[in-house]
Length: 385
Image (cartoon, rainbow, N blue to C red; front, side, top):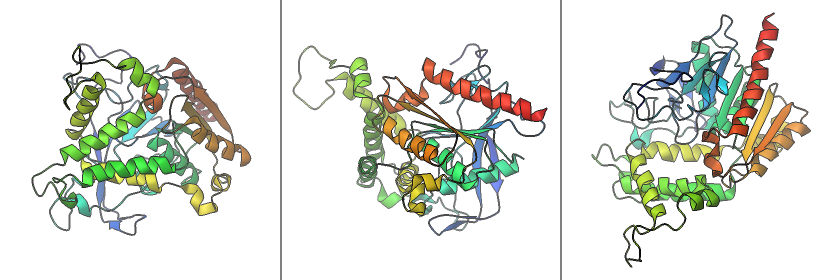
C-alpha cells in the first residue's frame, strides 16, 4: 500500500458506471435490452474533446488501469507503469479512459449480473460476445462522454485486436491506433490452448454447466488450472528459468506429488489467486472472443483489403520472446498496412518477459510509446491553431 501517492501517479480514482437503455444487437444473434459499463478516467478532457485516449484491456484485464482506489490498495492499476503525469501515456496531455468490457466480471454487465428478464444472475445464459460487440459498446460510451474522435486507441494482446477492429469499423473516430503484442487472428495453437483452458473449467464438478453461483459453488479447481496454463504461455522460457530455474523446496527429492520445485508453488499461487478475483464464465467468454476474431475473414482472407478503409496512423509493438503472439503476428499486420498504403510504425523490443512484456515498463518500449504519443499530442496542438 502507498504511504504517499507517487508524483507521477494519477492518484486516487473512483470507478464510474455508464448505463445504457438502448438495446445492443450482438454478433451471436441475441440482443441485450440494457446493460452497463464500468470505467475510469485519468486526466482532463480538453474543450473540443480531442485529447481522449481509449485503453482496451486484455483477457483478464479490467477498468482499473492506473492509480489507486484507496490508500489501502496493495498495488496500483494494471498499467500504472505507463499511464500518469509525464509517463508514456501522459495524463498532463491526454484524457484517458479505461473500461471493463461487456461480459466482464468487474462491474460491467456480464454472467454475474442480474438478468432483468428473470431477476436471477445471467450465469450460463449470458450471450456470447465478440470483439465487434465490445467496440460497438465502447463507441456508445464515447458518445455518452461527448467524444467523437479519439486521439489514440491503445491495447495489448486481446486489447490490440479491439484497436484493430476500431480502425476498421469506425475509421473516422480515431486518429492513431497502437497495437501491442497482438495478432490479426489467433493461430491454431492458441485456439487449442484456449480450448484446454475452457475444458479445465467445464470438467470441474463445481461448474454445473455454467450455473455454479445458483448452486452456491465455484469451479475453483478448473479456473485455477486454466489460469496456470495461461500463465505458462504468457511467460518466456528464459523468464521462467531466470526466475525459478530448478529451485527446490527441499535439498533432496521427496518422491511425492506435493510441491517440490518453486515454479510449481508459483503456478499454484497464481491459479488460486485468480479464482478469488475472476469469474469462470467470463473467462470462457473472453477466450471465445479471442478465438472468433478474424477481420480478414470478411474480405476473402485478405487483411490488406480489410484494412483498406482505415484512416488512422498505426504503431505496432512486439517483443522478441513472446511466443504466444510472436513478432511475426504483428508483422503480418504491418505488412498488410504497407500493402494497403497506410501509415505505420513498428518496433520489435528485446525483452525477456515473454507475452507479459507489454505490461512492464521496459525502457525502449516506453520510449517508443512516448515518442509516438508525443507526436500525436503535437499534432493536436497544431490542429487547434
